[in-house]
Length: 290
Image (cartoon, rainbow, N blue to C red; front, side):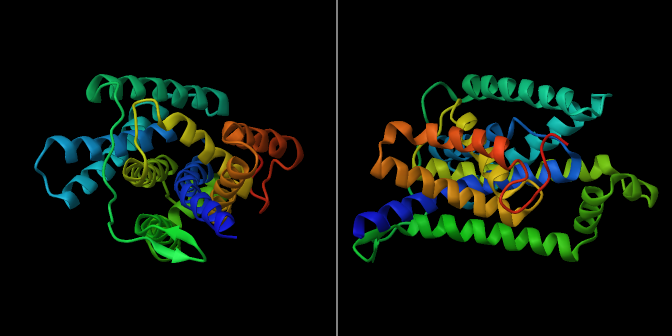
């Protein structure tokens, strides 16, 4: 039982990171219909900016976190304003290709700027592990769960109570009607890219403190965030969190009881099965092909 609980804790910890990425995927897709293939690079840059500042500057810890998140927001806004808006076609494939090209560019920028070696930072929260049925629960893991919970609550508050949040919901429900009443879909898409960049960068900071991050380390995590978003249904943010936690559990239990060699294979196999059997996800989100 202690072994099983340890696998569950580890799975929920990595699943929380996937949930943050999945929230960004779902947010951009719902508002604009764009599948942002550079989502993993948002995470990578946010984490590496934070880790680099911690290692090479004397800035306060909190300032480095803010700058890491700001890097994710800035990259998201730049991608939308400088690239997405310039694509005249509204078809899905050209927009996807733009974000794919941006992901290659961002990886090279990170490799040149930060070097080829991974960046590692100590735990953001220190303290003795908590014993849970014989399994060790690290304070860092609790922080990761708390961050995801705060992100979900914050997004819910933003969409329900703020003017821009309600405008983004309107664009997601009916872009033509939203434009007719004076809401700018392009502005709402920029906000969506900025929020998505912030969520991903926050996930990158957590990854740097849990393991390490290199210039090419965001691609696979970004893909798993997409799998989590599809698993939960791209139409809902609750599904993104459920999908992320479920994917983390699947990977952890599969690595523990089958083989760690098949950890990534399980994720990709889940994506294939979902797209074939239930493309709308568990909670009946939007179908990707629509």
